[in-house]
Length: 452
Image (cartoon, rainbow, N blue to C red):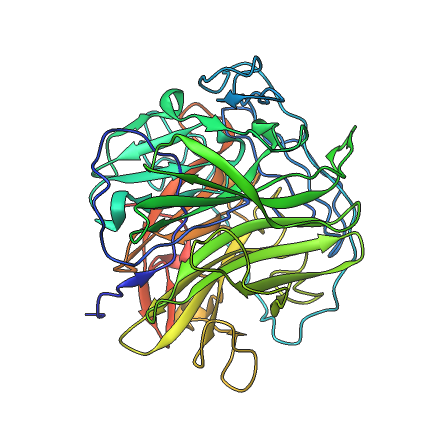
C-alpha cells in the first residue's frame, strides 16, 4: 500500500454550495488542463465538439471551441452572461477559438516512444465516464476540495460554462449559475470568460481564500477568424470555492503579440513553498513547460526568473510527437520525489494521452536527478492512460489529468469519448491508478480508460 501523499497539487474546477471555508491542510493543487495540444483546442465543454485547429508537427497552434459558453460582458461584475450582470453561463452562446502559430521547440532528448496502439471496440463507451448516463462536458478539468478537507470537490472547466460539485464522485450538481466574477480592472479582451482556458486553483488557508490562475486573451490579442492570438495568465481570488471571484491582476504577461501562456497549475510543496507551472509558446518564446516561484499571496511571481522544466514538443519518434502541455504536480512524502503529469500527442485524435515525469531533487530541479520523463514499464506501455486506435476516442484521447486527491490513487481527466448518445464531446472521466517503478499507470490492458 502506498503511503498517502499529503501534498497534492490540484486544479480547482467549479465551485458552488455552502461548505464552510475553515482552514484545512496545506495541500492544494490547481491544474491547467487544457485538453488540447499545441496544435490543439480546449475541446467542447458543453456538448459541441471542439473546432478543428491547424495541426502540424510541433506547431504549437491551438484552436478551441467551448461549445455553449458565452463571452462575458466587457465591464462590471459578471458571470458569463453577455450583459455584464452577474449570471450563469449562457447555454446557447459560442466562443471563438484562440489559435496562433508559435515557434517550435527543439525535439526533446528525453521523450520516450509510445507503445503500439490497440484496436478498441466501436460500441458506446460509458465505464470511464463520470455519470455515464448523463456525462458531464468539461475540457481541462481543475479539481479541488473545499478548504482542502477532501470531502466536497469542485471541478472547473475551460470556458467556465460548468462548475461541477460532488461529495462522492457519483452525484453531481452544476453550480455555475451562482459562481460570479467581478472583473473590474481587467482589459476588455480578458473579460471574454467563454474564452478562458484551463483554470488552476489553490486554497490558501492562512488567508482563508482561494486563488485562481487562468489563461485569458491578452490586451495585445486580436480575435480573428482563428480566435484570440495572444494569451496571459490572470489572477483572481475568492472567499469560497464557488466564488464570488475578484480579478487581482496578471500573473504572467505576454510581452508580444502571438505569445501564449496557458495551462497554469498552482502547487504548494511539503515545505510550504509556492509554485506555478504553465505552458508557453508562440510569438518568439520557445515551446516549453515552465515552473516558477509564487509569492506568499499566490498572486504573482517572486521574480522574473522561470525554470525550463520540459520541452513543449515531444519530437519525431516519440508518442508525444506534436506537443507536451497541461502540467500537474504532486509530491510523494514516501519517496521525497515530485511527480508531474502532462498531456501529449494530437488533441484532436486518439493519440492524445497522459504521460509522467519525476524529479528526485525538488520542484524546479533540472540538473542531475531533476525532471525527466519516466514510465511504469507496465505491459510495455509508456503512457499513464491512453486510447490509441480505440474508435471510442477517435476525436480526442485522455488528457488534462490531475490527481483526484492527496492519496494519488485516482486521476480525473477529460477525453472526447463516445457516449451513450453517440456524441464525442470532451467529458469528465475518472480512473484508479497504481504505481510501479515510481510512476503511475491505469491498471488495464494497454492502460485504456476503464472507470471506477
